[in-house]
Image (tube, rainbow, N blue to C red):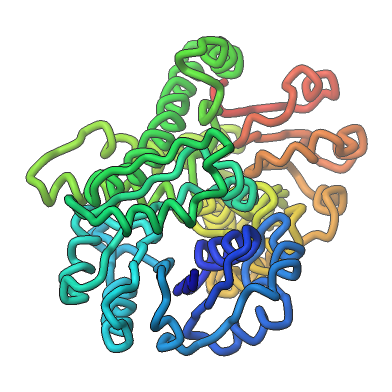
Amino acid sequence: MKISVIGTGYVWLIQTVWLAKIGFSIQAIDLFEDKIEKLKSGIPTIYENGLEALLQETMRNIHFTTDIASSAWSDIIFLCVGTPQDEEWKTDLTYIKQAGNDLKKTLIGNEIIVIKSTVPASTNAMMYELLGSKNPVVSNPEFLREWLAIEDFFTPDRVVLGFKDGEKHEVIDTLMEVYWYFSDKWVPILQTNWQTAELIKYAANAFLATKITFINEIARLSDSIWADINDVAKALWMDHRIGNKFLNAWIGYGGSCFPKDVKSLIHQFHEQGLGWDILTKVDETNTSQVDYFMKKVWNHYWTQLNGKTIWVFGVAFKPDTDDLRESKALVIINRLIKAWAMVQVFDYNAKALENFEKYTYGLATGIRNFIPIVISKTFLDMTKNADFLILTLEDKRVLDEDFDMIANNLKDKTIFDGKNILHKDVMKNLWFEYMWVGC
């Protein structure tokens, strides 16, 4: 079976190495020559746990190229292109349409087009019509978590395949051949129609975002009545109907998926003449969660941060990634420097710090010329000459740091924990003034 994967980034490369690992020969197509040359040398173009070793192991099964015409005569062509948003939260399908128009020039009519990109309802139908209704089109959304993407591909919760109503059995059988790997691993494979598969991805991410927002709303009430949100969350976790995932109070969700998918789903409801107050509130609460958290800082210092040196731990949106997209840390840092505070930052991920350094050149530039942002090499280095600490990353490695030394370094001995990761009793025993989300 000949398989091509067309894309521009994260899902494209993960899909490619997974297929190569289970034994398929892959044509991996991307428009950028520099990216292809780097991959030919065995160097990943994205940061993901275990990816470099897997890429080098599977390169014998992958042909990297910029020639989209090489996808001709493929049995299956996976589309993994970007689907950004416009200013009205509508999903921009420019790259999907561009890929379809490029393929239209080379297809012979038998190739199965599989859309892995996150796309709104009717996109697969649009692609089918764009290709002249000659090629089967299948919706196959991905459910990858950054840093755990390789694990998620090999041990997914489910595989979703959306087919055109009345699709030929041979098309369905061909897709099932690709996913034979899961046949003896008890992984559910859901076969449904296009619209259902398209909606499943948005519904899953929107529901997880709603769980995060729910516990953050409870955290605000917890603050007001002096309850302990951590104990509230633990009690919820103990209920098997609820579970312990995505119920941690913190400064809000970020990354490339949740914010984009929540907004896109709201837009899809509006397009259908429907309103969804729950999801609108989810987005509003997530946006305002930083305001709620920063109010603790403003109140404690009476808004007088001018001249303060503030230590911020974490720049990526989650641990062990280099991804700064929608990172709440960036919002907080921007507000601090606009208040004329000095900022020192650290992240355990060196690549994240590299990306942050590039990002800072456009961050409140006029102020930054007078107030530099210091990027520290170690966690302890960051605490030197700092007044207080703000944690914006739930990386458990921080629990192994020497907080006795940190207590000596911090001038104000004050910690604002935006991820509720530290143990409040330990911090208070070290005489820190410790404030977290939910109390």
